[in-house]
Image 1 (cartoon, helix red, strand yellow):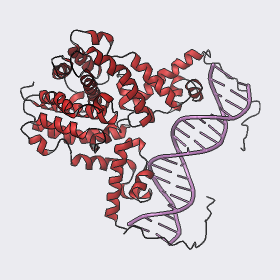
Image 2 (image 1 turned 45 degrees about the vertical axis):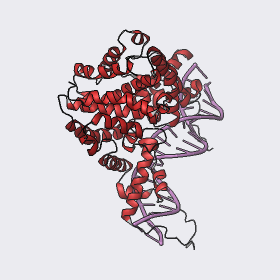
Image 3 (image 1 turned 90 degrees about the vertical axis):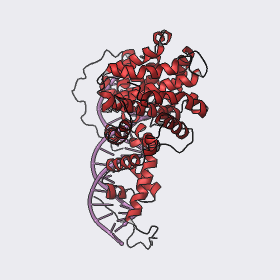
Length: 206
Length: 206
DNA sequence: GTCTATAGAAAGATAGAC
DNA sequence: GTCTATCTTTCTATAGAC
């Protein structure tokens, strides 16, 4: 209301820092948001911080995505579209159980490049809207792809339990960083986890 | 600064709603906080809401606990001190694996009384301080008690994997409510989960 | 022992200049 | 296409009355 101009016709030139490429700006925001949501979760990551790390002003997030929630939905959809553990190659492998166990142990080691998809989910479940977005995407992709790759009865339940096992291990080993798992020998962990996954994916299991 | 009294000597009598029992007030806040943190996580639960549900003013939280963070730490310590699944009885049972699987499936069914401890943890991991509090308490209690109950080599790693399995299943079945698990037949789930837990707790496993 | 009132910071979203 | 400045709400924590 009592608006006051700081300086009339201020002689400050505005340097053109960016080529003003809408596509590049959108991508930069998306990448920054993915990292921020993986690190701090939906509620913990602020639009100001996401924008700053992308080198733009916070306003552009609403300009390009409509809201923080829509940005989050797009990050989740993007991330799940290019899976790291449950890839098409893994699912078509002759030994799905061993493949998943090996990839899981390798990728949850401390300091490793985080599994963005599960990390974003784990750190965002407290928010009901964010949880719903994650649940829908997981059911639509991971759950569907994995249960489709399993032979035998109760494929849906067995696939969901594999997802629970993967999420639980990432949670305890990387997100919470329980010492017994964070410091464990990777070879030992693989040896302990492989039979668990195999018990779920083996068709003999019913 | 420009403080204005609403009404001088307002004739509003203040009804004494509570017997002004410090112990009872403290307990009421603690119970309310436990429910709120289980439902919304550390960041999602506000001190105003916690106080309102306990029937007191928000100020008393700082009066009795010092800060929201200290209140959270006390909730976590209290909750983990009386475990629901990993009870002394369960751990001394002859068939730990089956006991855990049975209890887990029964207690994560949709709409069930939630497992407060894991629920609080799952919905609070996004906050670094809350995560640290949970990690410390889990290592000090669950991890220690469970690995102490396991015979054979690598008890610490196997115990931590049991915790990961329990957390993952609660997450997917109750917190995220993935349909395949939320709607699954409890008997089927128990049959699928029991061998997983047994593979981890059996001393033959190494 | 408990309250009302408020300070002070930070959040998401928006208006309008350039 | 992008900015600065601001609106509005909400948060934790505190001061001081009764």
